[in-house]
Image (cartoon, rainbow, N blue to C red; front, side):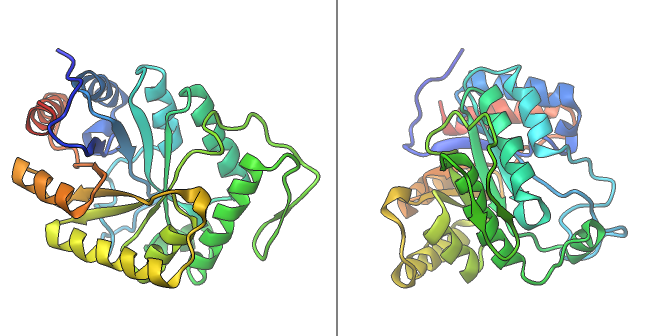
Length: 289
């Protein structure tokens, strides 16, 4: 049975659709279809191009942990679903060429019929940056400029940009995204810089692996940033998304809603297809029934 209503005003997403057991595309497909049928609003990937070997803090996963490329798995899932939104949770923006990424994500928005949620962050694994030949220092400033450059490519009639890290003019990059003026930019991170970036440039903010107290602290950080950083009117109200550190029960969901969280994105649980599908069903029962 398709569940169309929720006891909460919050949206419910699902994190990890392209990694772990969902690194198997058939498992990801089945999980995506089950999530859509259950009324889950969005599916979210993670991203690390490479992981340090051997694993050492702050690396989040062992070296052999499978992680599919975000737009690759999301484009595949766009073809086997109809309504569920598709989120990058998160693209490590300073590691990418923003002109190529703008084409890649506009294409994803087109093939999905306008379902992309563009989550991004600056990254934190120095060995990953080193392997990609991208400077670790200055990654925040690079990310800020890349956001502005991508918006120029997606919105300007004659796209041009003249920055420190990226310059272009006399070009076109078509097709444009389906969503206008562009897919939402959802800024990940729990530093003061991330709060400022979300306030100044983001349609939303995304906090990962937080408990209720951590969420409250982050929201206070966003409020403080809003006192110091001007927010363009065109961005509208900042949407708050959170992945809880543990699978949320109804009390946790209610407390997050009271804090003003707009979207909760629990991590997929389960070691195989059956376990993943059982978790999708349990989450829908807990959050959407």
